[in-house]
Image (cartoon, rainbow, N blue to C red; front, side, top):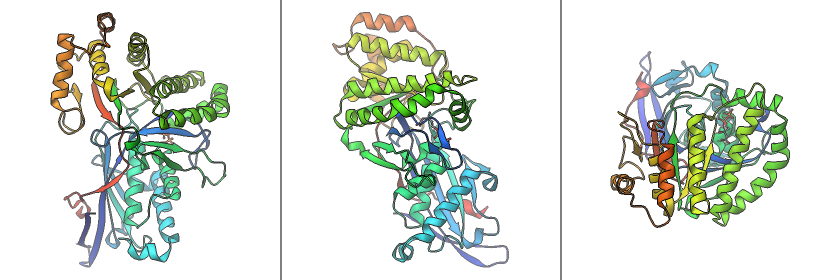
Length: 432
Ligand code: DP6
């Protein structure tokens, strides 16, 4: 692994070592949703949840963590997407730094001896983090963000991704604990008051079901108007449907969902995914006052998916919506281009919309959809040249939806691996 090893000079002219590394973390999209906390301070949920980790070539957080005794006069600092956050007034950040220091202190001497930072209490951390996707647009940026911070700190301190480390990420943002692994990931709610058993673990790696792909239909890049935390608090306080969901529906659904994923049963996986998303949004509507995360475009996308599935006579596409209007549609590789082409007919780009379908940073090429696939898909749309499974009637039904210019972007991605350490970023941002 490539790390940062350099020196810096403080105001009194003394030299200090600077040590660091850069890591990337994926986002994850839950298929059994976390909604509701039994302990707001510790981010302890009222139900377990399970998610699919998305490939990092399309959406990720990149975080550089550096540590030095030169920084201690100013304490821990963090820049998110170029703007400095006030760490001291951000309780979640304070908790993550404090808890990672505690884990480092409690680690066996053998671990501490091999760590890049041998005494976390003697240094301050300066962190630079950025997302390759819109922050707080319902694309789980807090999940990849806190996962990346926790993961980068853990590696700097010589720690593996233990259950304790996932519990630290959870305190940053609940869903972040699931972004510490690739593939299919469970967050067990736990029972203990201190939250030590509310941890994430991998159910299956990405390689288990590599045919699993996802189409992200970005309907809005605006920041969500009701944050997950405040939404959950109101839901827990007012929705009896949520209480019923947590106590009765989710325990059984977790078992069914994991079985569907392990046996690669897309019919069961798809139906459970859509039902769980719909029930989560029903609990939002049952909250008083109600919370509306889905909008008209979200509902049109859901209708289009059901129309496509009805025509195929089976589930080939399964939508899910988090705390925002954007849909994530799970598809299998064999159907992905047909479904994408059908959705492009229903939701064509508007005038002047340059972004279109992308597969990574800066457009095609950086990620999964290669330019020829985009062209292929567009050609399919223009020629009506679908596979034999798509009939003309379905194409006509898609044309009737014709929500021109309602989507901002479509990202075609797939299931992917967990966080990793990458070559350190060359900038010396700690010289500020
Ligand atoms: C709808 O993890 O963002 O995406 O713990 O308050 O940070 P906090 O909430 P957060 O909530 C995610 C809610 C969800 C469902 C899910 O990811 O399971």
